[in-house]
Length: 237
Image: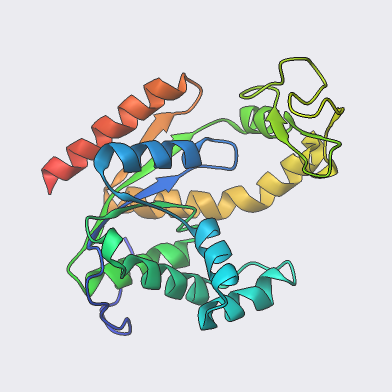
């Protein structure tokens, strides 16, 4: 395992020392499970996507830096992402701990997170990985439909179908598939996104904190297993 350096990060007063990391490909359901675990464990649910949107909305100095990348359609650099996360975890409601959703996305981010926690003698308690085959991910992601209304109400033919096939429940307009949701486009996107995720998975496997669960089951069964794994990690501490 690559050891996180203890030189560099500035100590953050009150930084939550113990975290759970939620891992999974787009369409695996990690956002839903992160919310459920956060509620069940009494921890903060931290989504990096939400953090970026909040920073942009509040117009903070960090938000202005994030905006420069978002407006160009570029990924926010690792160093800036870690700064945004550090600021959030230093707030009072994060002191009991947090479930991280959408971070780390790269091995470099995982190393930076360990370095961040090390200044408070903390660590990642467990990395919880929802494993779903690529073919199933494509099926789930390509099942998204949006209505023709300007508000674009979103449905999923697998997990949230409309009451009447092809028709929006709210305004009665026709449901359509976006170009980005077509199978070939999704496969190309996954080919770019999955390799960095697998490096993060290997990183936490080497650290001995990775726990994988099968994601092709009832959502409640997955929640129950993830909760058992999280509580077991808590007891080991």
